[in-house]
Length: 231
Image 1 (spheres, helix red, strand yellow):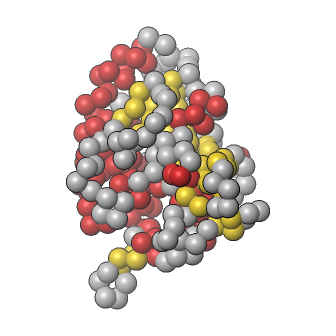
Image 2: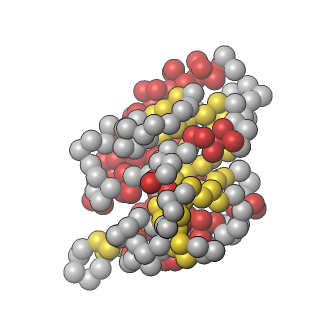
């Protein structure tokens, strides 16, 4: 609960590759206000940030997790996600988080992926956190599909800002974070950081995007707080 409303507040963290650094700034702004979310759902990079949040990591700890995903090779270039095997993402998440399964997380969490063959939505509500995040982040052609019971690819194809999943978890107030600025998502409030000068591969601009996310949430905070007080 937050602000002693007695209501459940949830957040949906959208897809966007490297633009996910803005999620960290958004969460930092809420952290400064003492607002904790009662449930979280994420798609693609939003699933990693969301899982870290659900595990209790601070905004700074989550930032270190996201930064560790981007690895320079010996030529000075950056390997996106350190390779094309999505299980590398699973391993990284499992190493960094103090929990291994979704159902063990202290904050309810869902990750959204897409079936590779039929382009149907898959929502991970139980099982390995690392595997769920890897499936949610497996964007072609950068990654091969994540093989579990079937092949999964990035959830951005079916639900880029999973506000519907936050609502399904029982949230009374749903906040969405749309990194691309054009997602069709229903929420009580949607934060859209202006990342028009960046792309999903803007790996050298993580700090700038973090700051933009923080400012977007900070400027929206008076409106959000007023809405929360009416619950």
